[in-house]
Amino acid sequence: MTTISVAGAEIDTRHYIGGQRVSSAETFTNTSPIDGTFLGEISRGGQSEADAAVAAARAAFPAWAALGPQGRGVLLHKLADLIEENNETLSQLETMDNGSLLRSHRRGVMPRVAMNIRFFADWAINELHHEKFETRGHTNNVSWDPSGVAVLITPWNAPLMLATWKIGPALAAGDTVVLKPAEWTPLSASFFADLTKQAGIPDGVFNVVQGYGKEIGSALVAHPDINRISFTGSVPTAKVIARAAADNLTPCSFELGGKSPMIVLEDADLDLAAEIAVEQYDNAGQVCLSGTRIFVHENIADEFAKKFGEKASAIKQGDPRDENTDIGPQIHQVHFDRVKGFVDRAKAEGQEIVWGGEPNDELGGLFFKPTLVKNPTEGSEIVTSEIFGPVLCMMTFKTDEEVIERANGTEFGLAAVVVSGNQEHAKKITDVLVAGTIWVNCFFVRDLRAPFGGSKKSGIGRDGGTWSFDFYADVKNTVVSPNGWKE
Ligand code: ADP
Image (cartoon, rainbow, N blue to C red; front, side, top):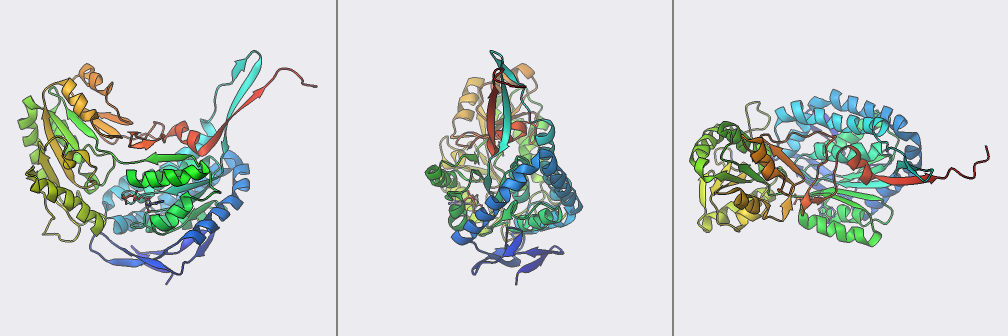
């Protein structure tokens, strides 16, 4: 069987290479995290499929590069239109496949997916220019040239959203693409491939291959005929990819994990702080940006905890297709066991669990209750490791200096949240926090013009606006002399 019916749509379970559907002899099983429903058998690629996809992308590159930003923009806008027209299908599909909320897919995520494509197409046309420098009468002309074949390796927590953060700028820059979605969420990428075909994007410009990271993923990143690797995922996998890329000196962009601090200062609006804190459970905690270490000034800790408790107890966990559900299941049994393992070990260490701390037995399956650990021992794994589940730690602090040191005392540096009623006070903290993005009195406000990425072990490089093109394109300077011209 090469197609499966999910959420009313026919999804091809084969690879999409050079504009054709290609199957592998072997398959892997895909199930829904909502209730374990069998969704289908998906083609499981390896070296030969990686080779074929890279060859197809390489063959399509010269013509795609030659189209220029305007020519590519027409097709990318058609693609964005098709994403919008297929919002409902994409939303249902993604929810079945990864268990995130249907309502956020419909209203937030899929419109953003279309915007990811539209925005970068327009940026390449309208914004990608540099002022000319004059050097003793010579003119420096800076340009962003297509660089070749970009391999994109993406995770399961926001599959199409995170894939299109990469696909948008890569295609707009004139690169051709081989996308390998995560093996736990293969479906939206496959359906997306059909949309690229309908949009008229030439065969080979966009390819999707399916399979395991250790098989087709590692074959792709070690491939000598690729020009870029963009990866979002875990730190250990990034190290493996960086080693493979080193042999060919393939440039890498990495967006990795986090253990972000959320700092509630003494002067904070506590209702706002509690509201933002509860948002850290979004997507059942499967968000790399989440502020999972909540530092609260000791003088307001009790009042904050009370307000947080009121809001947290109103969170409705359940079927992500239900409009009233706030958080759904974990993605997969392996991940569920990992999250539970962290909490079980914290309990065994005697850490104080104030909320949750166990599977949601009423719902069964992969549902884990929103969990709060109070004042865990400094340095214990529940405070230092990225759990990627609905598990928050709440700690108190006395002084700004202390909280800054503790907030920065992590190997990660992806994001931070500061809640304060005083602008100067907030700035004193944000000036010295080490993070790619800091939100003050808000969370998850993301503008595609702004840089996004991680410091320290949270990543290498930045996405957004021209930063994306600095990675996907070859930045070139052409110096033109005033001398030697004959006409
Ligand atoms: P997680 O632990 O969240 O599943 P990973 O970093 O292992 O995160 O996976 C993110 C993506 O990286 C997935 O698409 C996965 O298949 C891919 N991947 C895993 N291992 C490798 C590898 N060795 N080479 C290339 N890609 C890989």
